[in-house]
Length: 199
Ligand SMILES: [Zn+2]
Image (cartoon, rainbow, N blue to C red; front, side):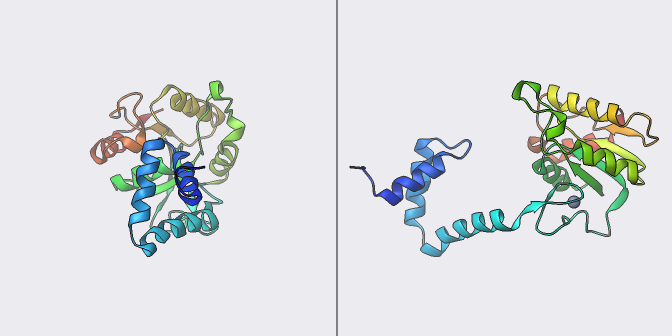
């Protein structure tokens, strides 16, 4: 006999699968959801359903989008001569929140991580090289994380682009090595962008 109702047990199990949420937190969240008003709890369920049913990758930059193109690619006010390469949509979000970059992005959807079996073919490097080859960019900014794998990924991409005339820069090392873009604060990200250096 389960100690709690089957439905409650199921919600605890599902929440406990989320990253960073242990069994205890899952139980706490479940009892919280049982306490709040029905519409409040269902708003969470609806938000999860909407994300899974409506969100896809932008066909140009692989950012999250609700149409063929994301809000950035379809914004006529963006500077189409600048392209910043980031690992994940959440890195893009961090740079956007810093509010100093007005160019376009390319999201790799990961980084090369040989130990985890992630090679260049599993990322969006092919489409990126195509995009740069066929585009009219005046600068490519490497915004991968300043980690061993992020640096390795940037180097791999730079090698793929060797021979193309477009200059490649990288974010300045204001971000402590090993820290991750999404956790850097606004000032650090602004400095990193303004002080970007030749790759
Ligand atoms: Zn896009």
